[in-house]
Length: 396
Ligand code: PLP
Ligand code: TYF
Image 1 (cartoon, rainbow, N blue to C red):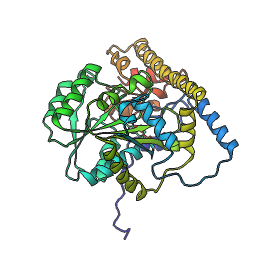
Image 2 (cartoon, helix red, strand yellow; image 1 turned 45 degrees about the vertical axis):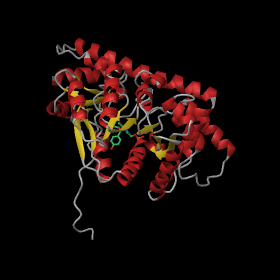
Image 3 (spheres, protein in one colour; image 1 turned 60 degrees about the horizontal axis):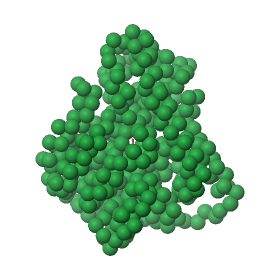
Image 4 (cartoon, rainbow, N blue to C red; image 1 turned 180 degrees about the horizontal axis):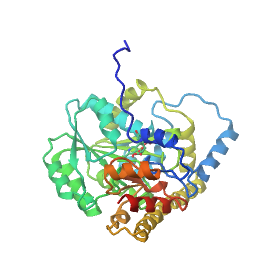
């Protein structure tokens, strides 16, 4: 039965990693995958995480199954980060959160659930978006279209295009929105623009699915949650996939959450019962380690404070790299204006480099970027930024 199975293409981003790993040049730089590296080029193990892990090992806790929907204090902590303390939806039992296998798992559980309750709905994602958005919703059985988002001419947001497209969608369409730090462009709507987007979503009767994988990397944990809280104030059904992969530097532990905002406590109980079926028939229940670690940090004031500081450190280092990159491009004689890089938020920058320039960067200089021109600013450091700036100047 496997004879006729066709060879599938590699993931465009993770495939780039494989290519990078086999490159023998010492000056090679990987700006492809969306991972935060410290100034030494390493994926950090946060101090707050190390402390929580130590405590866990010392406890020598048994590894029984977790509940289907995961660890209750983890879910509470994840929900509070999104909605804030004592949010009305949480207090009244209208918000529910389940632990998931990363943000990807949250999107998948949400997609499977939606396909069950709204089988004929269409899904729209931003143009461009994280490639897995399309993959996840198509595999769940949905037709996936795009709404305008990025304007390459301005290196900015196509507000009018997006708003017009949303208004023209049929009621019930599921609209996937990046709540902060858009992947791949780094371009976010302004607060005022978000207000109008939210109003349009409500008026048109769309179903918002907010994806927040970079909370804390834009302006801070609270500010970055403002879009989630805006949608939470609309009194409509909302789905939110959130991830701790980046904010806790726990990529391999698969720590994420799916949060749904419902119309009543009773509705919330019915929805949760259905989500549990989706989870049970996929992987039964989530793993213990990452969830316990994150939960310990979120629920221990000293560790929480330490984490907030470490997260600020990561955010500020990325900002610094943006500033330095723009300056160094000028220093290397680049005359094009790259100031848009300073306005972009989060780990990524749509650099405006063409496919050919990206290819030349890789082939001639060992600098790996995604074919779309996306670079991961969080992979720049004091040791490689000169080489990157000089290489970009050359290919331009
Ligand atoms: N959503 C977006 C926009 C992302 O960039 C990512 C990144 O990996 C995810 C979701 C998934 O995150 P995770 O690694 O937690 O599955
Ligand atoms: O966009 C990125 O680089 C991150 C990491 O299939 C990632 O979101 C990339 C591709 C993928 C899964 C994760």
